[in-house]
Length: 191
Image (tube, rainbow, N blue to C red):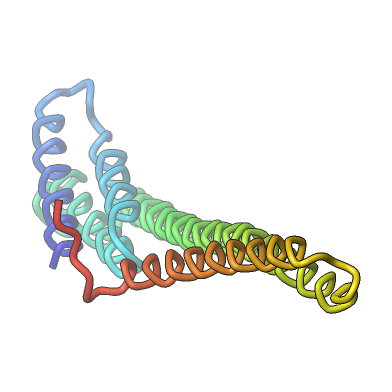
């Protein structure tokens, strides 16, 4: 509905502008350009080809009916009117095609950017998780290999370090889980 109403509104506004311009002799022949501009705007703000192509057909009909001689009658038999209609239709369809391709490319670029951000986030999270895991792994290896060599105080110090890094790791994982819960639709933030 939004695209339909937008298309209808833009074409109506273009028709009114063309009617106003039609009263000025200096603006003769500008109706086609105003209608092509309207089709361009419709192509930019609506989704897909349908509205732009439909608007281009309507613009050709409006231009031929109201703004080319004979006025308020369809005349596609005159060579000038026929060529004008064909050119206007081609320009409008090409505009629809180009704007749709641009929108598709923007969507692809946005998706690629989101994927890049995900990869960067995953690298950052992996690095933050790897640091305490490496410390825990190293302290456990030192304890195991040098169990008889170290004093009781050194054992307790290494165990304390393992415990602190384990707690930090637990907090990081809990924060990650809270972030994923916040992204779900069931959670509502209260300000």
